[in-house]
Image (cartoon, rainbow, N blue to C red):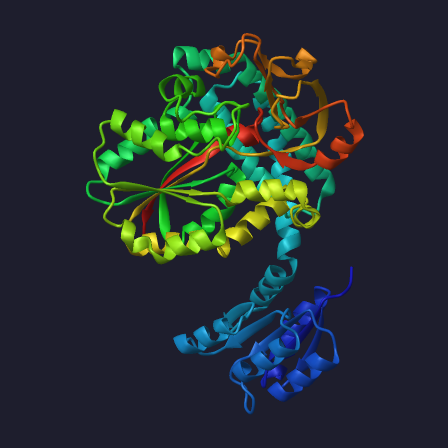
Length: 517
């Protein structure tokens, strides 16, 4: 490993010889200068890993030297050392992007700590994360052997998400592979859990909060308990729990989280089923029966989510609410910007629902466009691109305004998405739907051991268009491929993000209630 080279600039450098000797004994190379001009020349002439800079030197002060160093090498860590604790000096130094700030007199251990924090932090954090996960690996494995309830699965998935995000910065490829294997096993066990319990939950009404009960169980109480306050409900489509946790730090600048929960998407974990269920408070077969003018089946022409506002109006009426409300669907940047510019027009409503359609478009674009595949090559990158979108989206501007206007905020989604890599053969007629994670049709041919099959869709409150209509769902990271042109479609769809089937990532999704700070 290369020796770390340190440049130390201080007009009293001779008094710091004990500190320098201490660092040299630790294996560091220390080059010293006693004025700002020499510090600039040395930094330009030689390579240094880090600079310690005295703020109060004769001639060029540390604050004058700092921008010169940053202009030459913006990535060079500079630690400012000063006798003064004046606030404006500290603010000027921090504003100039210093790596650390130390007050004289400094001791050798402070210097050593600053070096490690700035140069070794990533390595040390990676090592500690890996060691911590190694210790918890056995506990997670034992938990997978237990018979968990739906609430316990939610908590377990939170833990898996935590480790997925922690390990993304790890340099230990082996440990990342171990985690990937463990998560795959978790999805296998979760799929078995869903297959065993799903239809019973719906029949007996004993299951967790799901798409069709979310509004009644979680949103309605907020509307009843917030008096005259305006509530905004933002439904970010296709938002996984890890993506939610990725944007959460940005939200915490403006809101505090009053409540965060995981609820279960219904099957299929697809927009026309899950999001219509969320807004209607009904399961698909109930929507078909009660609102045939709004519900569209798989083989019906036209958009399948054109009546969310109508479904919501009917549910609000059933729940006994009689107040002003609005529904807004955002499908592109300009529509989001227009809403952000006209947000004040919604402040007299009790409830404002915003459906934001970016993440679903991202997952589809990642399948179709090579450039997006490269930008979101794996799950950490998929989270990163979601965060980048959010940071520069009109939605963040909207959320900032809501905090300023003291509005209550709900953020949720309709379903998640999973990265698929294992093809499963299925045969269907020309009327079979095109989704890769579930199939609905009357002439389906498949291996029943590889899927969750519903020969009688009504057991899961799904429409039965024909006597022989069946639904089949892919599990874990499987995806359906027709035998025709098999290799082409396997290569095209492998390692893409899909939804519609059974997995932790698709079914266990976030609901959060936030109060303005």
